[in-house]
Length: 254
Length: 114
Image 1: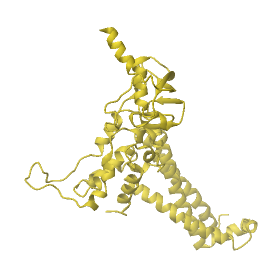
Image 2 (image 1 turned 180 degrees about the vertical axis):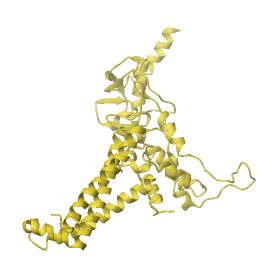
Image 3 (image 1 turned 90 degrees about the horizontal axis):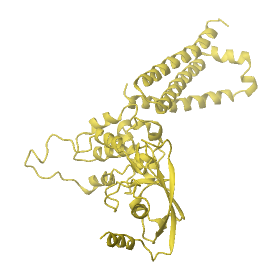
Image 4 (image 1 turned 90 degrees about the vertical axis):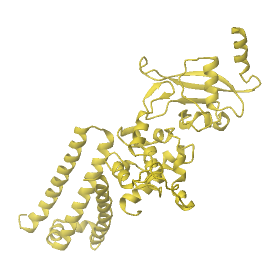
C-alpha cells in the first residue's frame, strides 16, 4: 500500500514539464527562530501552474513542514495571501509564467504577525472589519416584518457594488504604508467596507460608522499612497472608497 | 475634539496660509529683497498695523497647521495612550508658545520697546 501511494504521489509531479523555477520560501517560526531564512527548491512547472501549486509540490515532495494557509484555490476564500517577488498577491491567483522570473520568492504578508513560515494571524484585520459594523443597520428588517425585500435601483447598486467584492484576504493591509508604522490604524480593508455600507441606500448606519472611523487612528491617517488598490485581486479600489468617505466627513457628500 | 474637525482646521489653515503668504511675498517684491530686510524697513512693516496683523495671522495659521502636522507624524510613529496624550498636549503647548513669542515681537515694536 505504501508503495502504491508513493507511486501516486510521484505521478502528480509534472514530469513532462521542460521548465523549472527556483522557489525560495521564507521560513520562520517565532517560537524558535530569531530571524527569517530562505529555503530554495527546484520546482517544475507548466504555463498554468500557480505559485500555490508550486508550494504544495514542495510540501508534497520536498518538505512537508512548510506552513501555508489555503483553501479554495480560486481566489474566493482569501486565504493564500503572501508576498510573491516583493508584491502582495494571492498564491492561487498568480501563475508562475506571468512572473517572468526563474526565481520566485514567497514571504509572509507584511503588517501581519507571523504564525509560522507563510501563515499569518488575521485577528487585527477581523477586529477592524467588525469595528466598522459590516452589515446593514436599520430599524425595520426583513426578519421582524413581513415587508418586501429592500429595493434598489441599478444606480444605487453601482455606488457600492465593487466594494462588496472584498474577500478579506488582507493584501491591501499588507501593502499599506500606514499599517506598517501605525499599529492602531483601522486599515484600508475596514475603511473600504465602511464605505460599502455607508454608500448602500438600504443602510441607515452612516452616522455610526463615520463616528467610528473619525478618530486619531482612523480615516485621516490614510496618506493616499494607493498601494491598497494596486494589489487587490478582486478589483476593489479601497483608496477611492477612503476618499469618498472623506467626502462625507468634509460635507462634500451626503 | 473630533479628528474630522481637527483635519478641517488643518486643511483650512493650509489654504489660508498659502493665500496670505502669497500676499506677503508680493508685498516684499514692492522693494528690493535686501532692502526689505533692512532693520528700519522691518520695523516699519511691524508698525504698519494692517500688515503686522496679516503677519500675526500667518504666524497663527502656520503654527496651527505645522504643529498639527507634527502631531500626526508623531502619532503614526508610535502608539500608546500616555504617549498620544503627551504628543497632543505637547503640540498644543508648543504652538501657543510659538505664537506668543512671535506676537511678542510685534507688540514690542508697536509699544516702543525696541
